[in-house]
Length: 376
Image 1 (cartoon, helix red, strand yellow):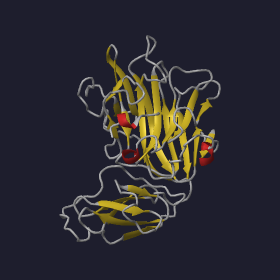
Image 2 (spheres, one colour; image 1 turned 90 degrees about the vertical axis):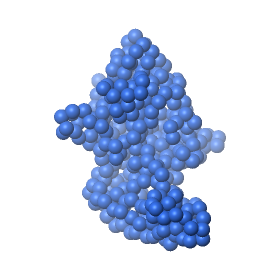
Image 3 (tube, one colour; image 1 turned 120 degrees about the horizontal axis):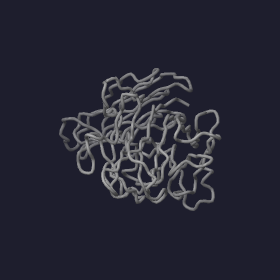
Image 4 (cartoon, one colour; image 1 turned 45 degrees about the vertical axis):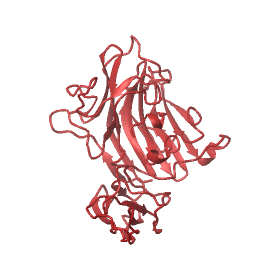
């Protein structure tokens, strides 16, 4: 789902680590910076996640402070990654952190060791989109936020993206574009409220959760009609500082238009020096299968490699490594530079699929059964 950063709403880690890091603001508290005084040492709050994994929150009482941290036991400095939101610890590691603020000296180093000893292949985080409320429900606001608005999103797309309960025209809170149904599925709905006007939704975990390394798997079914562009993908947390494509992009599920014979999905990676179709591989479904049926779309992410599969993690259909960039002028491998956040969306129109036509049925919806993260 190639995007141009200027149209968006806006570390290297120990090999094999699996964790979540969000992208919100860093640091909070009440202490007023006092020139020459040390910033308050970060403190941690730890909550249980799944199967021994822990969710870690860092904070400091110095107002306006940034928290810099490491996960490999090394001493952090002001050039270390900035803590942005709670992260999930699912491997044995040591977190060290300092706080820095204008006018203050750096805080003392805080250190916490985690030894969850979680076996490979263990489920450590998921959103199952359960809903027992008896009515359509908001996707978990602790996990999902939204890109909203129009403007083409760098691809000449036609839709206006709407957040939960948005009533700003053309969005309509009585006909949401994203909700968790009583059927236990996330629904992302593309609608045509009037001729030539389209709405849809783009959910993302930016600022709330992200991951680096591990296996991400999403069970989904997608609409297949002219002008529709469903996608499940990841972007680097550092997009707000290095922009796209330097932040890196990994496309797990992506296809356009009506079903083909054979039907297909494409897995791609993008970064500086390799955008567009440089590194994309088409997976062809078996005879009689289409993307309109239920399938699991997965990515196996290790240090130095990204693999994609459909339905069977034991048989990836492509693996990309830094050597895949050979021969691409100026190409830089960005996928070991820090955490990524997850996006799920259904675009309408754009430079790849073209516009909807008289054969396109609205509303059209993409269904997601779950999003799961496993250790490698």
